[in-house]
Length: 318
Length: 318
Image (cartoon, rainbow over all chains, first blue to last red; front, side):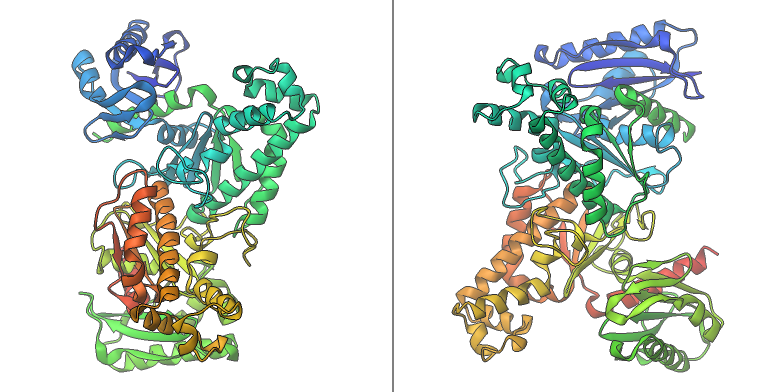
């Protein structure tokens, strides 16, 4: 029998059926905008309808539902505690889905499910110790230790974005200062571009955006870098430096075999990879292996795959 | 039957017998200076003689030997790869002890054994997720995840002293920049005192040391702080700040129930504890519980206790 995976993201929500062998049934894949501005009931209704549509697409139903969501959340009680992007507070997602579909439901956060997916079926398959880091709007992550997802005491392990790399640095909305995501996230890159454009720096990327701050994007930065624009290339060098320094901290603290990098930033990997690896090698206690840093292969579907493994492994242990 | 625990430290080496119930037989406790300057064979001979003396102190021998040493080391092959303090390189400690005593031998590093000891019998007994951090000459540590020691891919997890808190900071002998131990270790405090004394700053601690750099010590700093000396108190405030910021990183990354602080620095806890907890609360994603930071109760014997649990649990699993 199949398993149902649901990925509730800040922008898109997706649902799909997977076979017990881990094959995503393409015809069951359903996706829609999350429309967070409409409030939590509307977001839930979208998710519910996608789950129903995915279930209706194939014979035989599903053994259970795995759900991925931004955190923080409480796995035991199946509650999304606080997802500012979605306006959710203490939303009992597991209870709601279980009542609507009469199926077992399991919940985990998107960073953890990214780690689970890449460790079970992705670029770090069967690697016992791995850390997944997603670098996009913010930076999140998940930890697999000795083959199992490591959640910590309150399901909040793996908050790699909020590892401070400068205690005296700028304040972060989380309350700390100098958090990693203030330097390395896509948002950090955009903020830097906006400031530099305002300051009158010269770059092709500013021309491509017609000098309008809201038009600046990672895509345009890649375009400028590909054309050899000095400013764009230097921004990626800086990104490589911060990623390398951040990954060195993770290697020194957790000594994983592999770190998997995911998220939008990886589209520009050709422009930062060498600098990242050079910085990492300099700053790591143990020189990491050539293939110790890998790029996510499951991409946009990584949380969906993770949600599948979550419910499948939970059902096998019942 | 009893178990033999051996702690080979940079300054002292100790051996003792423990009963299967975890009682250290005081009459079996033997200790001597490590005398690292005499070379690796001399250091080994001291350790061997202490083990023999401990075994001779009671009837019935031991079921096995647990060994704690500074790292890095290779547990599987029982080799201390590189202990600069001891001048050891690729020393096959497990093989040597096994040959000399015809007993099973297990090896782990002192930071990990600190975590194991405090989690099994100390101030974090039965806590599933804990991190032990020792702050003395350097900063080391160990991680218990879901009740088990977490070693990572190459036995080098838990190198908390070498997570960088300033990628642009001063170079560290490890190759990185701005490592935590450059700010928070006892060595960092001593270096700061020496610089400030040279720069002509005023403090009771400089008077107590008769203005001789080599006489400056943590003990004198405590003495000055206890007398209300402003400089000494400000140094401890700074220590509290760096410890708090460093612990926030560990909580955000690993979400343990408890962090146990050990090492010489904890003797000055009265002067830095409030500042540390205040900084931690500001900088942690989840406000940590009142008792989330605890001080080691096993103190100087923490590695010895850890070595006992190491061999005991290994023998029970054979």
